[in-house]
Length: 408
Image (cartoon, rainbow, N blue to C red; front, top):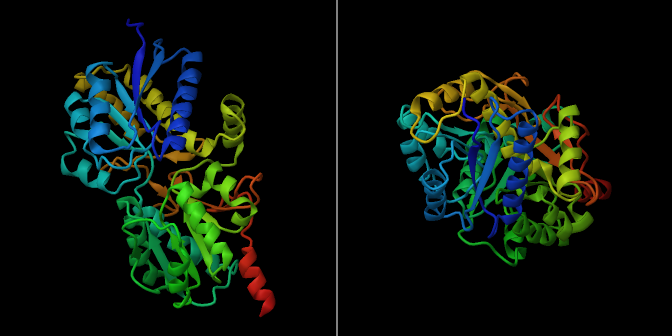
């Protein structure tokens, strides 16, 4: 029986624009490894995480990281959060080695790659739903607010602004495509910015002319979102304002302060506020600091626990080249839904991506909740307002809309 450590690789952006996320990805994987090791490891073998910085997250950087982890460190699996940029190019060395790869790239392209050759990409899993569901799920969310009377939109027009990354563009296009199905009208085709602005005033005034009831900005970098939001608040539009998940970061709230109150933020993978989520949050903050966001660190934390369960059921861990053992682990991942601190991870049998609730399943026990938060004051946690039954607070009319209603 082998007793040598199981090396689990992780490709994380510890430098560059996503470094704040990268540090939390590293924290989450380290925390999970320590917990599993304290319980005896995987069939008696301890887990040894190996981290490589992907920096700018280009295809070259991520592929190089994957090759180094496989050839130099001989990792049995690679588990990490997201890398924006490689567009699945890292799947090739991973498929050649036949090891398990679980990531949170939130990328529709993952579906296409796995479906193109299921036998080759048997070990590639995406631990969250594709970014498409961010867009479709948002339209369902605002329709739920409207149809339940929690919010009375002034009209049915929505305006969508996208950042330059493919991730943001896919979300924006999904919003536009799904809008009419739920009774909304696009004020204009998604406004896709090829470069980000430092002065948003002219663009916001252009949007104002269309008089939308909803404004969604699908870019995801916290600093850029903060600059946008501060200029929005100088002369707020009478809209329900949606910002992509980066606005959940501490760096966003540090910049915007209490002006962030009322904005809606969504993510297809986050952290629940139930007993499991609360215990995880307390432990995470005790280890990594009160301002460390467990909503980010939970992603590789969940994936490593799921991998450990699947490997134990499969009867072992496969090294690079051990296709037979790693196929058994992959089969176990597909067959064993895992109720995690983020909700239930259940992999779609063909896409090998997490199934979202309520976007693709109406059963909250069989899908990963697509979470919508409403920002409160900087020192308060964002209110989790959807989907039911996971909510811990009710939707509140944003201050700028409440003031407009009072004037009317």
